[in-house]
Structure formats: structure tokens, C-alpha cells
Image (cartoon, rainbow, N blue to C red; front, side, top):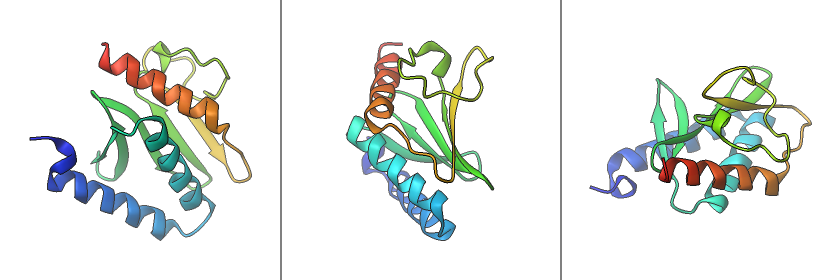
Length: 129
């Protein structure tokens, strides 16, 4: 069964909607923007809800986990260490061998085109892995 037609997909999307709404501050707005950009970059991305409350965007496997923390929004790319970050978006987890992350704080702006390119690269990595 395709994930996007399952109740799990609907439940995950609804949970992400609720998380964004409940945040009610800049983090919710940022998460909504990140979500929009991910879907623009990869219209086939699947939304999942994992690890007791983490929005995960997947295509051929986990691409990116997006979480709101007290003072930041964190986007963790599952295979970030294998991606070419041409625009230097990664600013966390740089020493690891697997994942890389982008931490955004209130007032930060995300380079939309560079981010979408990074998402597309992650999809290519996962689907050709």
C-alpha cells in the first residue's frame, strides 16, 4: 500500500498541522515555511510522525526531521554528511559521519532556493542509494 494513501500519512500530516498551530510563535511559522519548501522541492515527499513527536519528511527513506526547540528550529538531514552543501546551509552536526543539521533562530532567514536544492540532493541520494 502506498504510504500517501494510508491513514498513517493522514495522521502524520494532521499531527504536523497541530504542532505548527500549537507553537503559535515564530517557530510555528518557520516550520510551516520549511514544510512548504520541502513539498515544493519534492512533490512526492511523504510526511511521517516518528520518535514520539517528530515530523519527518521521507522519500525512499528519511530525508529530514524538523523539530522546534525552545530557542530554535532544527532541520536534521539523515544523510547530510554525504550531501554537497554548496551554499553552506549546514551549521550543526558538522563533525559527524552521517547527519548534518541547520539550526535557525528567531530572525534568521532561510535561503529558499539553496534549501530546496539541498532537499532535491537528499532525494537523489536516497533514491539512488
